[in-house]
Image 1: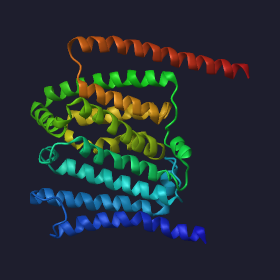
Image 2: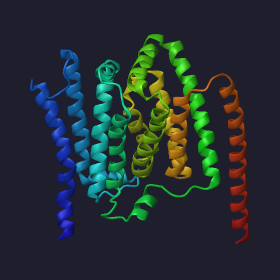
Image 3: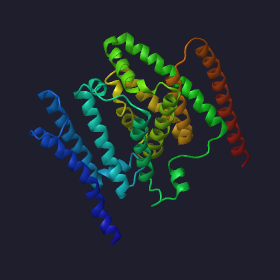
Length: 329
């Protein structure tokens, strides 16, 4: 009886958000005021069409054969209602985000929004954490320790912290170079991105604001994307989904840099744990918030070399010990 109920509930649960998304796009296409206001007729049509296509793609995961085919590539359970719903919601979120980035002026839209406060940032980021915890079934299918283990939130080894800090420095340097490249290749877009970033985060330049920008996204986003999603939908899909939420960069080199940084964080999660990727993300955001110039930059370079050396030695020593232990058996 339970299996029969699950066989009916799983496609129904997956289909509901897909149908609702498609309905919104269709009604707006027919003239109902359900979509983004202030768009040209061409942009409105493109957004509505993209929304409908996204809904159709997401609805495909309501069918078990499609989930079974995907299970050959990703570690999902095609019979799980939770996995089915996660696939549908991830597809809807990614598709609608990409649609708006591609067919609307997202930089202008971001500039039209009020500047973020610490409380706004809290309201924006905490839902990611809640979604991650709910998705792994905390208090329902898993206890707190079990949920933490599923999310990769474990006590890191000492060298994991060194790795996280070294990676944060490397990602920061990469981000700075990417931003310089963006200014060289597309100066007009780069200036708009700078203006949008300053508008969004302009009120968070205080020590408390910098700390909030470092901690809240660094923890909440990592727990959802690297902790909950990556083990199920894979490194590339998670990085794409993560990149799609950073609409303040529009279609620029900076967006490509965010994708590359997401891959770096994902690799850290894959080969260590989510705690380590959190430390890396928080440290990276902190470096961006503080900004490094002059003597600070020189000092940071020396620290980076030391961290790379320590991390390299730790990885070598662990592999040597593992090889020795394997040979002794």
